[in-house]
Length: 443
Picture (tube, rainbow, N blue to C red):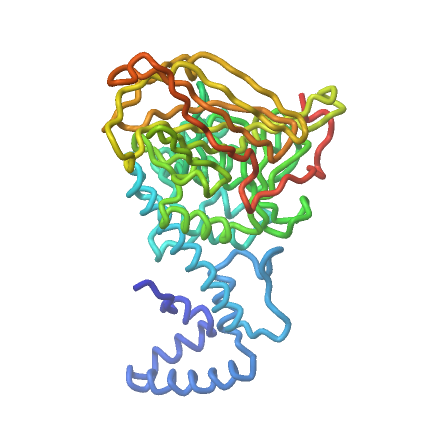
């Protein structure tokens, strides 16, 4: 079990070094221990009187700053109480991170090992230690996140200069795929954090604290230590894409996000396919999706908001604003279907898209250029597509037309309904205007 202990050199550093030398020279071990016990009793009295200098010094050794924008000593709180409260936050961050790493490895084929630091090694990486502005939870996170690229520091420095962050190992959380896009959300290693920080500074002139990134896309999740976005010190802000006039508030702090992600992994919230943890939920209804069974054909549909492709600045885009969603459709034979299901081929699709009071209907052959065959015992046919919309809360519904290929209804067409599903944000997410935005940032 991991626990914090006072090391010998910590004890010596607390007391006067000359006094320590004199004690060790003239007293035997038993005498020293008796003296130390006496000192300890007197020290406990001082601590009870809130003159707890030892814990104040321990805090200085353990953490980078005395106070943080998102974490500081309460009025009337002793240094012992402050240290204890702070160290418990550090330990919870560690426990949740370790759980996320373990569960992610259990639920995906690609194993990502060695990302949690040993408990005894609580020093932050150099790239973190040099930060002038720091969130307490950000420091706790990187006290636990192992830099797996330590053996190649000369190469790392070169890559940082070239902004080639995607070459360095980071911890992959989830993936969103549609068409030729593959959006991999990763927790950044210290080296990658430094690269992304450099890029943001060079391009936009802001010093920010990146935590996560969509690899190979200009899309980051930062920790707003200074509360520049007005959502609280340490809030997680998602920003990216060609239009930075609007950002996404994701969570009030790192720990809140980690807890939520960990719970989702525990409850197998994320849909897993081909050994990859996807952003789409396993049960579409958890995110405004739908499940419909018609003639034994089960269709699940759910949408996912993609901020990177959104357009919001009406003055720049000539009033052509849009929210962007990908959506996933899973087609299979219902396992509870009573009777014999005969193979059927999807021939066409019809969508009805309700954007506020406006309704748009589209039809087409097949889906994404394919005409999938549906039959009993097969794995679901799954595809992804996208839908830009001017209205959050847009409703999609429709139907697929199938041709029956065998049995009494051979050659006939059947219609499989797709119940309405919602194009909306995650429950805890919120779109907010970017207070740092200037028009030149579109370029």
